[in-house]
Amino acid sequence: MRRLVLAAALAVLAAPGVVRADDPKFTYATYEEKKAVEWKATASAGLLLTTGNANQLSFSGAAMGSRNDGKNKLQLDVSGAYARATVISANDANNNGLIDSQDEIKRDTATSTALWNVKLRYDRFFSPNNAMYITAFAWGNEPAGKKVVAGGQIGYSRQLFKNDIHLLVAAVGYDFSYERYISGDNLNYYLHSLRLYLGYTVTISKDTSFLVDCEYLGNLNPYDGPYAARVKAFEDSRLNGHAQLTTRIWKKLAFRFSFTARYDNVPAPMAKVGGLEFAPGFLPASEKLDTITDASLVVTFL
Image 1 (spheres, rainbow, N blue to C red):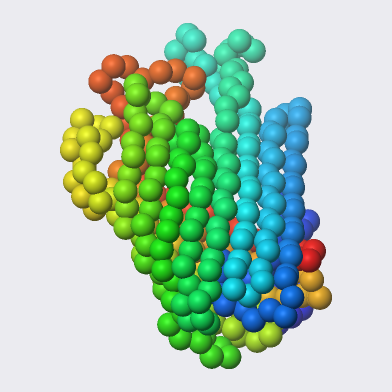
Image 2: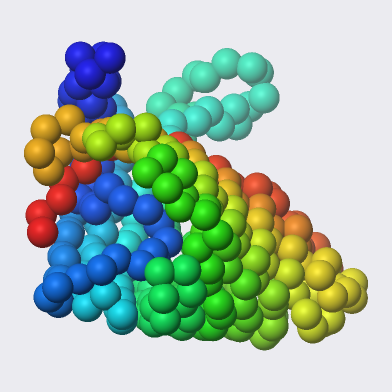
């Protein structure tokens, strides 16, 4: 089994993509007894550039820093990704169904990925089972039509069950978000939302763990939506799900496979298509569901 995992990890490393540097642990904070202040820091970057017949530029990077004294944990996460590609297409100017000259071959360059994220979180542990959290965040996703989303969260987190194999954590809190869209005139929204979270981890062995978690955000305030319709309370529901398998290969080197799904019931309007604006009165919506599948090698530095 370990040979199969090692082979899969080497295949990921050899393929075009990003090798992430990250702490292969859980995505939520849990109580850890500390005898001294613990500092952690990780960073990663990836670049892919092709020219000639295939023209593509993609870049991604991430960094994390944290301080934990057992009672107080502060963590900063920064990440971003950008991709731009040139696609060759046909322009049948004389409508004969054939390409007659070089003039009927088009090369269009467009941005396919443009996203960034900054998050600062503070956890105060009152006991192994009870904690309060405060989070400040800002992020943007151009293909999803959102120029910037910024805000904060506050709430209560509880460790429901824990033994050597299973860990179950739940949280409830309040989320405030300011959303600025790329398309449309003066589309700025302020959302007050209820936040519910549930995370479950199975420790298969000392080297392998599986995590699945889910976050729900439901708007408390009704507002006039971007599509000339009144959005009622809890109609703008957002659901974020994540599943992750991590196995340690050697010392500080691990292999991780993860799947992330993000659903927005009232998505932002689409960004420009081909650099063109939408006609007055026409504002198409972005897709409600985005998914990310990631296979990577994980290096822990501290």
